[in-house]
Length: 484
Image (cartoon, rainbow, N blue to C red; front, side, top):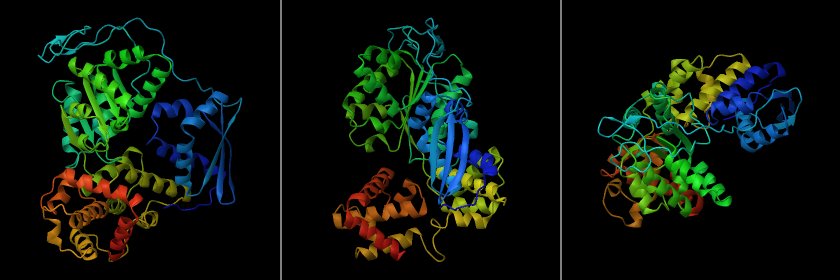
């Protein structure tokens, strides 16, 4: 929910600081330092119902880079804290701070092999050509062309542990303490905004803290795909393969589901995986769903993911959500009353990033209006999210509403029949319970005759997708929501 404010230019420093806090959730801090912070504001004004902000950078190259990579996120952050549409204009100014070109590594001599524990407990030196029993096989002398790109905000110490993420957290810590010794690969999955990327960065940061000479690569699956395409276009596949198969002790890839259906990418990743795994080097990937639920993924890649440990992160319970909010407030020096923390945590259940984003918006409002964060302010921010007084979103109420709409009985949902007349309403009930109660998949399965959590996940994903393509399902869901 956006709220408009009368903002004068003298408020710009506070306003921009709030926008930067939002940007920090999606842009690596080192990139903000290099590209965004050096820009200067030429003008900041309100034009009708819109705000117009003009930024100046050092040169045309910097303007083009920011426009291509960060303009959308800058605009979105500004609009969220101002509560109004915003036009962002980039220009060149000789007075702007100098912005360096993209990082290009110096030419270095081959690095000495890194010493890591062998699977037998002794220290093994890297050597090229070893097998599963040869300890750690590392480089052919090829130097990785980019730094780890790890976010220094994400450590295990700043990760709030609760029942919903305890297993995933423990697995990540075990991998970081002893890479490739127990869980290789480690496959973390959850819906967006629940902390899997935090754990991915924390693993890398922990490994580097223990062994600064360890070679760690963090990247998104999209980047892996784009680098592969670029290597194919410019006939650099040997360099691409040497980079990912021979150059790293730890490979961290975010959103691995992005490679599904891309035949050449899956093939290269398959061979990269084999090379790293056979030489006892750690692989950690994240996804928004478990391996068996990734549509279009080759079976041979799917089975590799299941070789190690698959750990899920469920939406946090309310106590954990409150703890996350308070930790965020303390870290950013934000005054957050207990009743506001409880209120926000009650109605934002399935996305930690959204929870933190609301806190940042409240802080922006408080800063720009000179008021303290209050329960009234929080209710106004979430007025489109909070149900009307008297609304009942209990599991029993949702099941009853779905059963009534489809002329079924609640026990039908707990049966094992797969007939469409029961299966589809059952999936809709699962989807609505997930949406309105925020319960984990395992907990929801308990109310449907002990269904497996993967069954609940599949149902939720299916209905969510069908809402966009099937008018009949959309009408049924809307009718049931009106009943509630």
